[in-house]
Figure 1 (cartoon, rainbow, N blue to C red):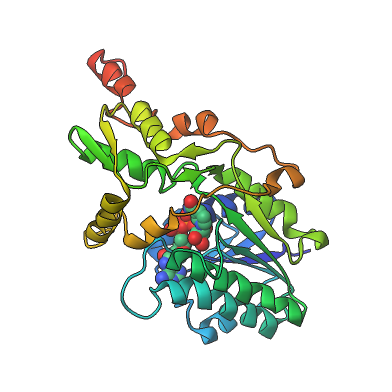
Figure 2: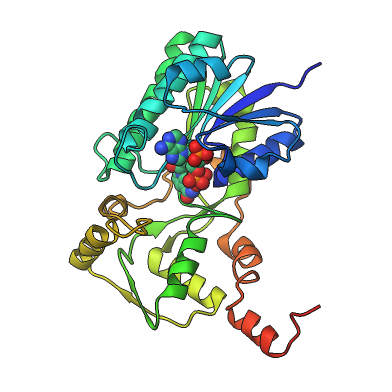
Length: 322
Ligand SMILES: NC(=O)c1ccc[n+]([C@@H]2O[C@H](COP(=O)([O-])OP(=O)(O)OC[C@H]3O[C@@H](n4cnc5c(N)ncnc54)[C@H](OP(=O)(O)O)[C@@H]3O)[C@@H](O)[C@H]2O)c1
């Protein structure tokens, strides 16, 4: 019997690559949609993974390339929007899930998993969270056409290749002595990417998961300051982390969103206005014991940092050479 095929829109990213690996181990054939093939280069070596380069915002492309798929996973997302069609929160978060649901209907695909985010709401403070909410609603509206939709609302996700700990490690390395930190009191319950992936897998064939919106959190809540201080300790960056007050945090968002790469934006600032913590963590219900930051992050952050205190020590002792 041919393996069941699962299409992953946004599968070239951090969560997507972990999900493809897990699905492959479970015997699924995967089809990853990307706007640029080179972004999915790590997946090209997976024999059961097809990488399709296409403009995912065009309904005709979705209709063409979803043929033969049994399940659709909607993972596309952005932290900051850019000018131009296909790059705004409205395009990626709000409209794309609805287009995917429509394409599922066109092909008679009956299962869709959708990645949302913790804190989404019609009246959420940031455009990121409001558009994520509208996309989640659009995905779940497909239930009216017999499509079983499950969505996931994780806090910040960590793991090898993440853009949270790795990004702060990079920013800490760039700042000389003092690290000005916006929104230091923002609260997060970071969840391990493999636990998120396991939640996707646990619900894939579960009829009871249809229509559910699962919150996903790690075992512990931290302030942003605690997480950045932890990153600094792990990577050996002795910085004076200066928490900015509300006005300076807003200002930092306004300034840094004009810097290439947008390390922080005003909309990011607005997202931190609500805690990224679970009111009801679904991992337990799904039989998943969440891994802690401390049990995972040192394995990929500290150990790989050439300029961590341990790395420097090894280098000076010439023990890091074969
Ligand atoms: N990482 C977290 O901490 C976190 C927390 C909560 C929720 N989420 C959500 O989880 C999902 C996956 O996150 P991630 O960390 O894996 O993100 P990622 O590494 O940045 O990957 C994002 C994916 O979205 C696609 N994408 C980016 N811009 C797009 C655009 N303008 N149009 C269409 N597709 C676009 C990319 O595909 P191509 O560039 O290959 O086309 C990429 O595969 C997102 O929906 C995100 O909002 C993530």
